[in-house]
Image (cartoon, rainbow, N blue to C red; front, side, top):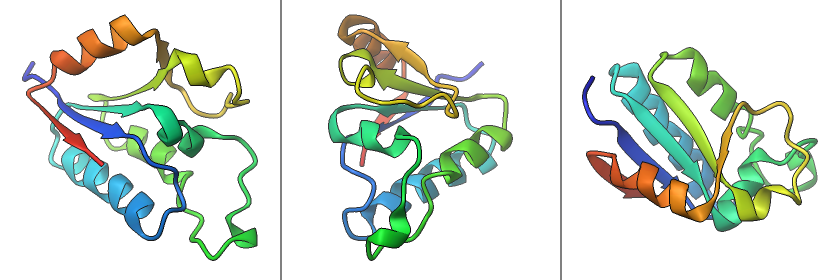
Length: 116
């Protein structure tokens, strides 16, 4: 199997349109049947928070789109930084939680990493 494309999501989900653009990039890669690894770190973990209410903000409700990404191909994997996940109640997202060392090793296995 080809080495995956990594997408490193580090910013919160509702910062202008940038959050939606992160999802679009991952969707394009998955639609092209590229193996994709999405890594949620730092403020990017907020994409995985349960019970989000974007209607209370001037934002589009797109964060559930990360789940749709998994339906595009079997070569899509979601990873989360362990140190921030204890503050989230995110049973609906099938993410693999990794400590910092294992997360770094998984990122290094990627052909390229896009920081979004």
